[in-house]
Length: 479
Image (cartoon, rainbow, N blue to C red; front, side):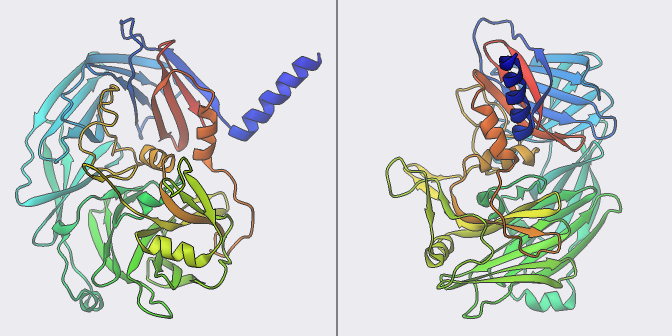
């Protein structure tokens, strides 16, 4: 009796702490006796609630379609595409057919893989996209449709959609126009084709400083795309808003706050809940500012090297490689060391809404060079070649910023501190609590024979999925 009670108590406590609930599992036997590793992908139907779970090994695509109650509707199996198409950009849903768009590392060649759940087939089609006079920027999905954004040297954005004939057709061309005040701020001029390596951000989950510290970021809230570009010459954030419903473009310029002791040379921003967070730092000082989209400052916090950090809810933490062998994490107390550390690289601020609070991290990171050249930081969106070559990895899923956030957060190499603000951005003094990615990492410790992991939102719920190579079973958990 006591053992039974103890078991139920432990089960209840673990469920309360980690919050995971297995939604379903299914056997995916690839017909071999080898425990092959696989990639796992998810494609959510925003209109009817269906969910496609796709597993890919070196040669084969195994697709499974489920309804809103996670009952299997159909399957589709076929050949995997050529490994040179290593970047999965996005997908479009047409009835029971899921069209996946992939490209090579240079984004010069494109291919569409069709998962036809009606006929239970998998086919591919190479498509011709000539960007000789344009620069590819990114893709987004809205209401199951795939949109592709490019830019020209004449400062225009071109928005395309995927037609039923599987060709990208121009939907709208936007001329970028600045207000007179903004034109004066942009003394050096601005060409959108100079923008490269745009990083997609999902603000519903934690993001590592490496992600938030990138200079060019893309956010999506419903029908609106927010493209932010950090102009290091004029020390401003250029903020483009494209509404996919009204097909309109608005462009604003947000100047950075100057320091009390000089002009900040390290600046970055982050979009959160209809606000723009900006941070500027030097070895002497830092300013963290919250603005609304009308460029009105709502709150500002100042940090000075010889004083403590009043809004700090965690130790100043350095993750990743340190000068001490086998030590990948250390803490520091001095504000001066923190400012010196982050100002020597790229600064960033990141956060997400956690109930009635905002959990934020402020810090910086450095790109690490090794023998053959520069090593991209975790979560970079332009990796040359598949992730984990030799392990069966096929795609890098840039279409899923949630997984990229999880992947980069799990392997961060940055220096930062955590803070908590209320919905009016007033500081809340409290102990730092583990976030959802921390809980997934703890939950994973007891999982064996795992491959094909995925972290994604479906119907506004966060899920963690993985494939067990020993039992040949895919498991999906609600987190």
